[in-house]
Length: 480
Length: 106
Image 1 (cartoon, rainbow over the protein chains, first blue to last red):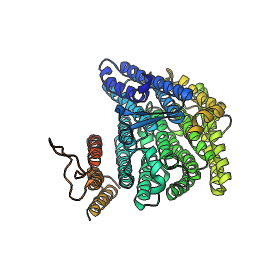
Image 2 (image 1 turned 135 degrees about the horizontal axis):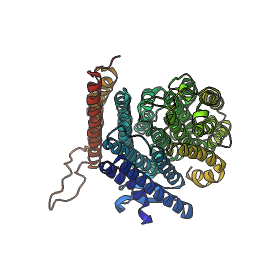
Image 3 (image 1 turned 90 degrees about the vertical axis):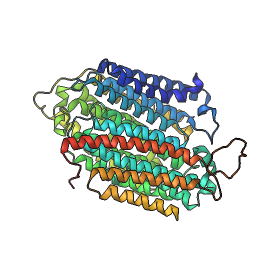
């Protein structure tokens, strides 16, 4: 049984995704229960896989017993198993967060939304685990298509338009990925990432291999998204339903950042192998980190602010990838994981605060009086995101700064420091409204388990930071 | 020369996606881009003087078959393209019901 854990990890949410719309025929509550079951099953399987990795080291699983490079394999190491645990835990937490959502829609729509979120989880788990580049495309599209549909499930006027724009840009990105992979395949003859890494020294000089890599990175840049290409992000994040947004913001970007890391840094035998692409991404990261954080400050819609915040935080990961030293890569990985937990928490708060499908920054006024638990979560998560120790992002930024100083990359180091200040600006804008201003009249009560989930996510962000030493040593370092 | 056709198709698709004012035309341009990628893989698979990879009873396996792997990969890509088109068209139906038009007000 434990032999087939990678298959179970990916299959459990898939099966639940088929069952959730059927369960919705009974009631929306049954659909959510079905979704939660699938997510908990994935969490249990991921935990078992992680336990096996910690006990006896990383292992590779070949689907259908076809040996790679002909067959598709998943590689389970500390990093991928740890990510799988993280994704399933965030999905289960988001399910609990949305448990008491009032049903304005017919249950069938709730079942469909839960199905889409489960497919998103399944796709992201596959992206985290897979070692085959075309298999990555398949899981990428599973996750992306379900994201488009989840965004379209929003109740606002612009949900369908935002989802369609997301679909166009995301599918163009996927097409670039496949085109680049075709070029890489024509040069190397393999789709398997470890095999490609072994062949890469002989290939690196060939133009089609470099072009293929650049196209694949460009495709991911459209989906992540990287700053100049993030036209779809603010609209999509503002339009998506509030109970889906924590998951949508936390899962796919993190999984794609890890995919980018594995493709450019790890899969190809270390830094320097993908030089020009990494240089471009590094500069994009520096620009993103400054521009997006500044753009976030000026937003009046809190969800758009958080969308620009996500784009900006991704810049840290890109800077880490471009620096390429061990410390920088560890910082990039750690920061991506920490950001996903905290952004999930912040979107949970935004979902609690907003009403009628909208969430303005002004709605945060007086939150400490009307919803003290949510305000506490906001304060902790916001300060953590801005880089306050002992929460998790601080250690990621610290490792990135160390990497920047080691490489003599002064521009990166300056950008990293300046962006922390910019992040603090928009975070304190929200926290200030919550604690220093009077509440608007007539805040509707809609809590259920939402405050507990918000506090749990914020606490997780702090706990990850407190335990960053053993976690990074056991999970992140061996994979680099 | 045939790879140039793929490049032309891809550029056509990208041009349509960025320059069209009609949302349905943008979706079709996305399809053209996806077809360009599919054609690229199929052209990769061709070998001179080779046959389609169909095994006949008693025939020997030889290098005279074209590479079947890109064809198999593109079956998946076609399925993804169809699914994407389906989701896109469903969204367009909803947009049309809401706004009465598919022209992007740029």
